[in-house]
Amino acid sequence: MSPGLLSRLAGGRSFEVPCAIDIEQSFDSLHAHAIPEGVSLRPGDRVVVHGLPASIGHGEAMRFEARATVIRAGWLERAWMEASAILELTELYHCGFEPKEAP
Image (cartoon, rainbow, N blue to C red; front, top):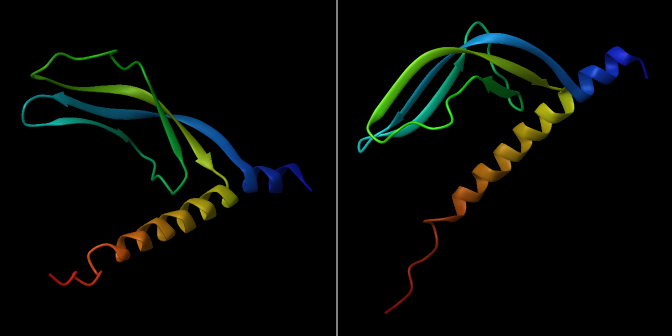
């Protein structure tokens, strides 16, 4: 098997991009969003953000720019992620449709 074909199947290609970071820890919201700029993410891709603060205090909100490494998933990993997502979604069909018990 050629190295090019193997890398397309296994993935692992990585590159750095700028990333917009939004972190908030307050009574109204607890979230952390990292949005890589100039790249569209696909199923199975991983993002590692560099230079994040270790913690933020209660009631604080931070917005800043950082660097992120995007690690692309290969064809097999992407196919596995899409299939497992569909299977997990079908598990939701089972809740709420059970017949009610008679009193």
